[in-house]
Amino acid sequence: MKSRNANTDKKKYIVTGGNGFIGSHMCRELVEQGHQVLVIDNFSTSKEEDWHGFGELVNVDIGDFNKVKKVLKLFRPDGVYHFAGRAIISESENNPLLYYSENVSNGISLIKSCVESGVRKMIFSSTCATFGQQATPVLESNEQNPINTYGRSKLILEKVLYDLSVKGLMDTFVFRYFNAAGCSEDGLLGEYREVETRLIPNIFFSIYGKKNLFIYGDNFETLDGTAVRDYIHVLDLVKAHSLGMQKLHTFKGWQSFNLGTGTGYSILEVISMVEKITGKEVKYSLRDRRVGDPSFLVSSCSASLRAFGFSSKRSLKEIVIDVNNFFIKRLKNERVRYSHSSF
Ligand SMILES: NC(=O)c1ccc[n+]([C@@H]2O[C@H](COP(=O)([O-])OP(=O)(O)OC[C@H]3O[C@@H](n4cnc5c(N)ncnc54)[C@H](O)[C@@H]3O)[C@@H](O)[C@H]2O)c1
Image (tube, rainbow, N blue to C red; front, side):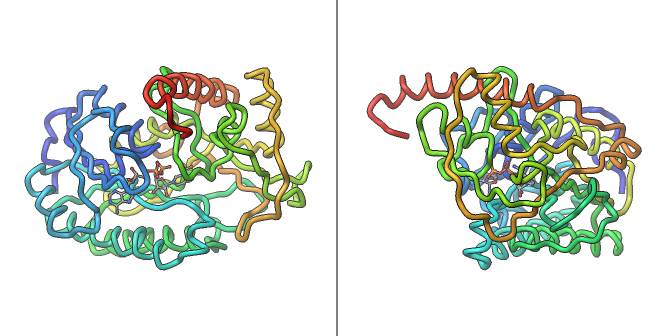
């Protein structure tokens, strides 16, 4: 089936989870490129007041089959960027049913709405957590053996999309992000959740006096004992999605891509970079390792380069500079808006 707007570069896209961290940057990029964007978000892990108006937004759960199908039939998108989901490993371990309902059942419902509305191009946000423990830079072909419920929930949806592609019902790129970080350079969009588990925002919450910082484990099989991760700037991720979707418009089938930088940093190295950029000391307390936390996760980057010319451009230093600007701006606005609130 040809794309509905095949004669023009300007397309119509659904962005599920477009009010969240990565989705909001995606919406901005698409709108700035002149595309028409419709966001489906139920504000379950983001705040309505953080909506910045990049596109139109409907407050609908992706699992609400009838409403989503109606939206798709009316909007007639050329493709779907599927970001909506839950993404906290510890929460998934404590409440597996929540993760299988949100990431799997609701994801399948969204996909069914797409199939029944004739929408067949999807980029699905998956994760390096589908791999589990890996010793080397992780290739797409590495065995996937997730060690937590979050990773398993994402892997199931990957397989659903694979089976549908074999039947010719959906064309899908699965993007397995490593650690998304950073924010828009002007500090408008960023990561600022009340329940935050990610390292970089938590370091900033701690240096700006909002929360104490905990480091989970110093006995990983790494050089300094803290976990090594591959931090990719969200603006690079968004670029990968744009290039990927352009390719997907002429692609049939299913393919997975690992999205990272190919370089890993330990937690202590990230802390040291934040101290260097901000000139502030980062204080932390050590806690036990969390269940299901691998030692070392760094992406191989060759597949996305070969398929659609993507390679990440921004460094850890740029990530930290951008997040610092975002926090300074956000906290200043917060002081003005909520002068009596503690969060
Ligand atoms: N942030 C990362 O480092 C990272 C790494 C790997 C994979 N991912 C994946 O990328 C995607 C986006 O991550 P994020 O960090 O932007 O998360 P986020 O929590 O900031 O954003 C998710 C958005 O989806 C919305 N949402 C959740 N469930 C929904 C539902 N049932 N219906 C409609 N909207 C719903 C939330 O309200 C929120 O706006 C997630 O699927 C996540 O698993 C993220």
